[in-house]
Amino acid sequence: MFAVLELVADRETRAMHQPWPSTPPQLKALVAEGMAQGVSFATRGNLILLAPPLVIGEGELTDAIVLLDRLLTKFFP
Image 1 (cartoon, rainbow, N blue to C red):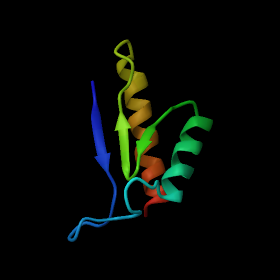
Image 2: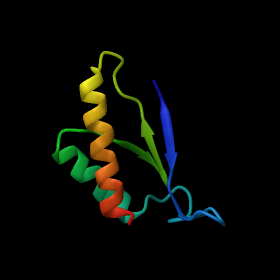
Image 3: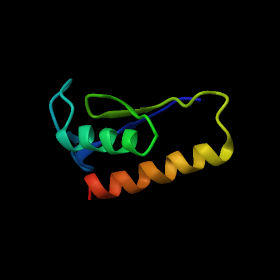
Image 4: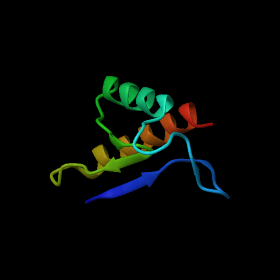
């Protein structure tokens, strides 16, 4: 199980929030808040890497995705 989300500042131009390989401050804050709530999200530049353990339960995966959605809404309105 593996997925990558690319965060862009502008959907039309696909302009990045920060030049590669810098990580946007709001993405660092998202990761910190996720970790504080018990979910680890990996990042590389403007990317969020999703690679949960293969033994994850469906409920745990759903909870993590719901948390990610909430954090994306908070930090990237």
